Amino acid sequence: MSKDKTQSGRIRQGGVFLLPNLLTTGALFAGFYSIISGINGDYIASAVAVVVAGVLDGLDGRVARLTNTQSDFGVQYDSLCDLVSFGLAPALLAFNWSLKGLSEYGVVAGKLGWLAAFVYMACAALRLARFNTQADSGDKNWFQGLASPAAAGTLVTTIWFWVDNGFSGAAMQWLILPLTIMLGLLMFSRVRYFSFKSWSLAERVPVAWIFAAVLILVLLAVDPPTVFMTLGFIYVTSGLVITVIGRRNWKSRRARRLAKRLKPGNAENQPGDAPPEENT
Image (cartoon, rainbow, N blue to C red; front, side, top):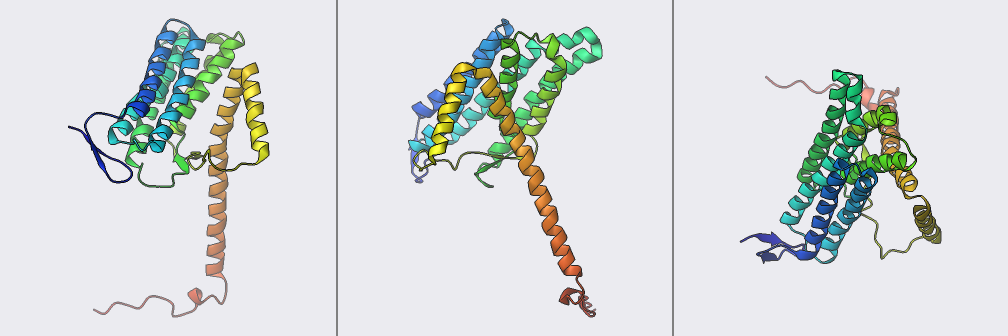
């Protein structure tokens, strides 16, 4: 009989919680549907299915927290489903639409295509495993590495955008190849990304945010692939910018501390500051 602890510390026995795991199963179904659609050549449906999986994945965790139905089973099940929906499905979509055509340039180029897809999927698996082992530590407001739903969303909406504008996979091979590898490596990187977990729907927000949300919804209704792709690249770039600024600030603080330590007259630099010799 399975046992799971709730946030209040009570132990619940037997079965699994229906609502959050139902949403997770829906995300898994969307990921599986994406794979089938990609194999059948319906690339737009394949991309849309991954986006739907991302929406459902964002809901299941929040629903579990709101209804106090979090469990160890749900965490592990969610990770396995994420690997299918945001690791395997996007990798296969990129390969089926574009990367497999690299074989026309020779055996080596052909291998680069499926290796890029594998690197993406492997990095998604590694990122999910690292996330599970570090779930109880670190700042909840930040992700270490690009989240797999964000990476998947950026990759599939880019494909959706080009398909929607009449471009073939063969024409975009040398864009999709580095993009697939880059997004994969960012997932397992130490680049910091804002997690949005601190945002609460019950909090007051500036009125301008409401107008921005309405504008995004209107643009989504007009041209969904362009808007989704743009938002994806903005988020991907944001982590890189935050990391670069953070490192520059860290180096600046380190340089100031070093300059202060080396300043003439500093007590740390006075003669006789050497640590006393140990008695033998």
